[in-house]
Image 1 (spheres, rainbow, N blue to C red):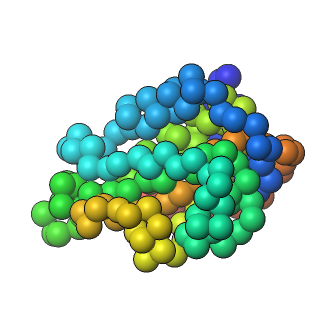
Image 2: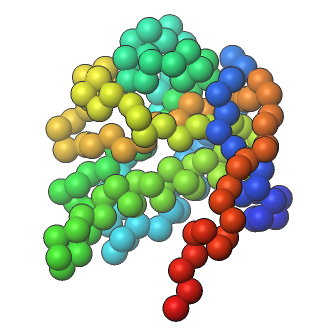
Length: 167
């Protein structure tokens, strides 16, 4: 698929089939994440691969939506703030790097006809407890990963004039 077709196709999916995601596709998605650029190439992140089957109620503590646990897999991105690059003024790039990784995951999934939905409004405390995360890991985003029940590619976007400042 051409790049601009891919980014036009990508949309947030909120209804998933229970069909398993093939191991080969999951590996390709994880490879896309591994290849994502990070500040000073620190790669200060971990990818969580969470199987949902039989854990739906527990996982809904992280994000209380039925569709969050419909897909067979949830992927999470955690930053490792202590290992991330920090700018001279103290700005730590851990969340930015994790966001780039998540974007690579979402675009790779779209290329493979899998659905995702970027979730940032999760319960951070519940995520750490349910997943028993090490104290050095900070959850940044989650996404279900699975085959969409339906495709909805009608995205509403602002005009370029509203988004760009020309100098």
